[in-house]
Picture 1 (cartoon, rainbow over the protein chains, first blue to last red):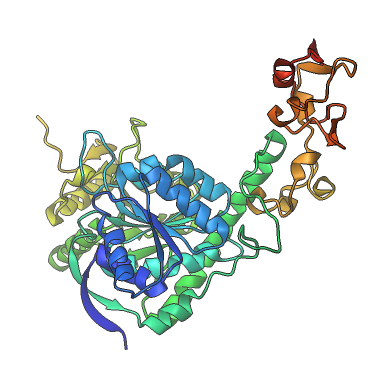
Picture 2 (picture 1 turned 120 degrees about the vertical axis):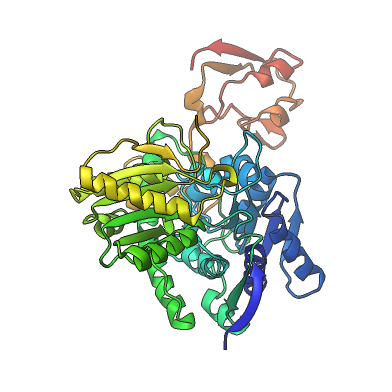
Length: 395
Length: 98
């Protein structure tokens, strides 16, 4: 029987770490992810797990030590947020290109500046090209479930890539929700042990990691990395299937909410999907309008074809970005989803709105306005605000 | 030789995962001597075999046998000139070019 609990998102991730009992966790505190290493340190101090915790002097060192531990053969992970991740920048790319299956518990927070500690996706979206797998969560339950699947995906022999399990800072990380935990023995069986074929601490094999690659080798290395990311698509679905068999909870690249007969769709990542669902329920009950939601769970690898097929017959789509990329046009999700729709020759009208930057609230009423706009765009065929900010004060 | 298995003609499928190398001392196969723009010249008549040049060489390019230094390993010497600077007897001079 699953265990019923009430946990914050950070507690849920820390609990998953306790159940996995990884070998090494180097970490440096930063709001709002601080609690994760804090709880893990408590488990270690209480003798509940035998993970080696490394107190490092910065996030640059945290990720460096995680790389070293992983290359040595250990199951290694760390946690961070925002500028902490920015300080890991160099090592993020090294982890991916060295093909080290590290797990990063990322609690999404806006990047400075202006300095801000609240949720948006500018940290992980900035790292979208670093070669890490990225999986996002709407709720505490989802971040826990995603975390349990992280090591099996990353360590799969056809993948061997680092993975970040993302959740929205404060909204899920500090919000306490009811949650179903998986029994310890089932987690152990699901996650298994890491048995790397090659590792630095193997006394029977000499090995070097991360050698210099001149231009005669660099492109071949990148192509192999791309292929691993391609394989990750298959492996993510395989692990979701295994997870469903264990828990009954179903996961995929994205969740489709009321999309079967939908004409107007919102595309979104993370916790705001819950608010959007509430708006959909209300709109459908009161007006019967066919509104739906596509909530992205896996952003890297990007499930381009699958997203395009799910959206292609919509009359109008609003893609909602929780981070700017200052192209002066789309946000990152907007640009990629729109490009995907081009591939299936979709006739849907598409707009791209920014919301929730630096933790700005988004409400049920905000989503109702978005759906109203989509209806109007579909009726008139006219888009007056292709790019807009939701909840922005303006004269 | 690792270069028999992985070399500049290898297709991407044959490159090891993350370029990891599963043996030791493969740098011997990588001739950094090609980078050289000036070359040390050894004068055996002036050399007193003090061996000061040996430990300062960053590329281990001065082999020693029976407590005597041998000729430069020009496959790996990058021509930095530290040996010429450290020699008390002027037995090493730097010549322009390879």
